[in-house]
Length: 298
Image (tube, rainbow, N blue to C red):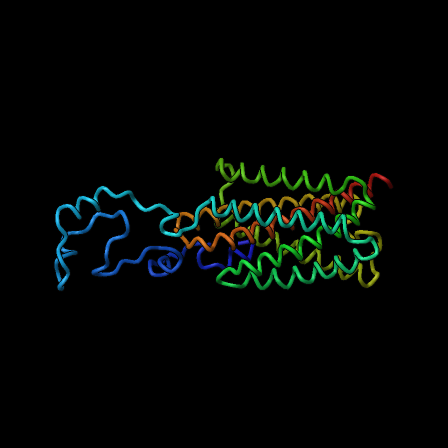
């Protein structure tokens, strides 16, 4: 998987081949003498043995007539859970970013951006490696990232007018297209697809690290180092494509989690994973818009 939030999860990760492991990842294990689930007709011989009182005809009829348990009744993950929590986190992210943009003095944007970046990185790693989601830590991550995005967006928009608007519209468009491609089945998440994405992401990460080191040591100059000019535009488009592919893999992980009947609390993990990918996508589009604007001026 591309997103560690999903790839390291026992419930969102790819199912194992063995039945026992499959049960650990959301499969249903069966046990002897277990009472039936809500809405499930009783099996023969399940009652009236071992000192239990046999059920009469009216009780049996009531069980047969009762509705089947829904995912809400069983506290299992639903798409609505993921949508609500993702929407709530995105709303909080936008509010904090807008407040940072509007209320923080320009002289303080640098420190705010640094604190937001470090806090977001630390909390992002903590949340990514936690097996059970912590809503408080995920909300805290969103606040730090909102401050970081608000500060960096203000700076970029001051240097490259219209870059933020283009990045926001681009993020919405890429998300919508990725969701359509996944829902329509035009792009399928296969083991080959995930392996290709993993190697591509490793290659991109190494290139980004090299570019950062070369800029830090003064080997290459310019605003974007190796990512300036036409090469920077091509690399930026590749990065946006990788982010879109990561979104599709995230959608597939959530789909498998819903189908496996994982606990409803995992909606926080799903929302956090989507938020991480969307923030990365926005940053790549913001940088791409700035590179194109800089190249056009030259």
